Length: 270
Image (cartoon, one colour):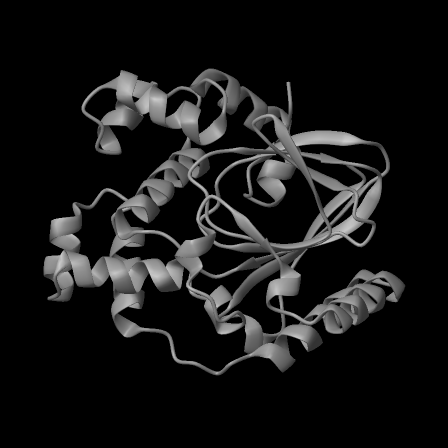
């Protein structure tokens, strides 16, 4: 990996976009990506990204990735590309689609953006001579697509409670705090965030572990603090989440600087 640089969007876009990550490989690379807490859009100008799911491989050029509850594997040929990381409620500001329909999947951007607009965006991004100008190209694209819809205050409130509890919050308590039934909360949350409150809380809970893990703290302590009744259940969830054992995951986190630069959980296949 030649570089992996994250840039903030313009001030007006920051409620909707966390960052742009501009990445360049000069050699072929296979890597795994951990489940994120937000939707991600990727533009791969050379069309050299291959997404591997099970035994099938799909070439990707421009894609909107939904939330996932398991790791994914990718192979990239030498190229430069960008991934756009939205805020939890940001993607719905640009793309009118029930976001839960993308859960554990993705959609080609042509489903939301005309081919000519996407071609123009890709060309301007490639031709921009500096990283700063590439960021301005992206800012212009998203500013023109901004739908100016107000976020649902109830879903915003649910997200705040989930973050404050670090994902360790019974859904019955969450609904009670918001004075709404669990079924109504789930319906509104799923369409705007991309998955159910319970599933989203589990993602937050595991990301809490990744970002605060200390090598000298036993996993049993983390399992207890994150609401697990036994370490075996905790280890199973973490392996489904990352594709590797807890020990292998934390070992790869220490050796791969990209994880520290941008917490998207990118680490090479072993």
